[in-house]
Amino acid sequence: MLDTSLTSGDLLFMLKGAGVTLSITFWAMIGGTLLGLGFGLARATANWWVNTALGAVFDLFRSVPLLIQFVLANSFKSIIGLHWSAFTVGCVVLAIYTSTYCAEIVRGAILSVPATTRRAARSLGLSYWQDLREVVFPIALRSALPSWIGLTLGVMKDTSLVLWIGIIELLRSSQIIVTRIQEPLFVLMIVGLIYFLMSFPISLLARRLEKRWQEYE
Amino acid sequence: MIEIENITKSFGPLEVLKGVTMVVKKGEVVSVIGSSGSGKSTLLMCINGLEPINSGRILVDGLEVHAPSTNLNTLRQKIGIVFQQWNAFPHLTVLENVMLAPRKVLGMNRQEAEAFAVKNLNHVGLGDKLAVYPSKLSGGQQQRMAIARALAMSPHYMLFDEVTSALDPQLVGEVLDTMRLLSSEGMTMIVVTHEMRFAREVSDRVAFMHQGRIHEIGPPEQVFNTPQQPETVHFLKSVL
Image 1 (tube, rainbow over the protein chains, first blue to last red):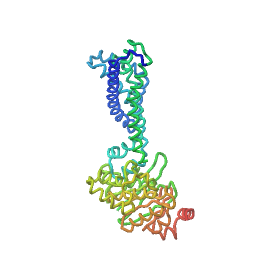
Image 2: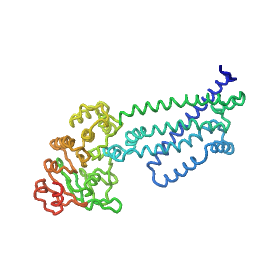
Image 3: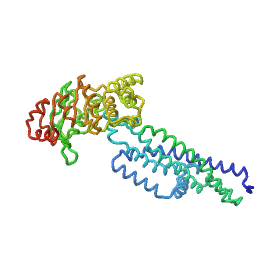
Image 4: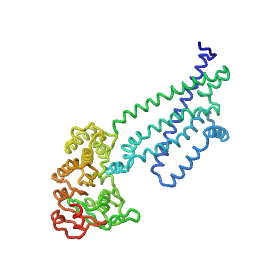
């Protein structure tokens, strides 16, 4: 029926690659989100020159293809004598890249909270930070979630580019197998399925959260 | 006592307040009337320091609002304000909306804050809506919740900024009734309003603002029945 040279060992190899993909995604999202929160808050509240400077740096990171950033960062770390693994470089570069997008999401979400709502909070005696923590962030979180999930799914796919600095993640592992067994369509279908199985629960979680929050609106 | 002494306030080139002086004594209800853009709302924002002023000064119980040394967060605990847009916190239930500031600002514990919030919500007639999210309330109910939220800080003064202007006509009454109740309990209030009947019935004094100045201030009978200034006459003619 199904005539293939793909072994269970190959499948396991791909799943290992999927594990690497997930783990890079995880660290990049953690780092990118934390940085993005800080940058986004700065973008939403800081004065014009901080904003302009941040905007310029962000433009730089977003305009240079991620692939080039991986390769350059990987070379530079050797030049300046940093003893980071390719995995660490991959996570750090992707986290910074992610943070520039996350910052815009955070900024947009913070600015979407009506000024009048914030004024009401301040008029009750809440301090600037209390207003942010108790009122602005919870409201902003709800409007930022869909974009943030989209970003996560995008980042998961962007991780495939780290194969260029020698990391064997899901896509690279599949290529190794394709080279050997010469069944590209079949292997890529499996890879696609694995990517889907990793992404789908995240979308599902997002949908459930959104539904739960809908009763507020 | 709130003492407003010759304050001016500009937004860019636009001078909104051009030397406003007014004293509101403890227990007094002062309504501020006037056409849109006359500076009424801005005046309220200045009183609790939500807006800076250009000159003059405002004293609340002797404390200068715009002095650099004044802690506005502390001052604002004394001055409740309710806005035209009710500004509910949409992610919190009615009860949580009212509990937030007492817990975070006054440091009340949960039980204390909850008991006090329930009391205030009962007071404005929302005792049966505690677990509901604001989006499920009518405009009038949201506005009463906003009043309860301000009352939960046990303010000495309440400022009302056109609180019925954004409401459907049939919902105006319930909010005005709540305000009547407060005034009957002796709350000191400054009420910016377009509800002339309310201003006439509830106020101790009515101030007419026009182009950034208080043109006339006095007991409601005087301002409404025998206005002294031509601008007041003109305004009242247009709204009554």
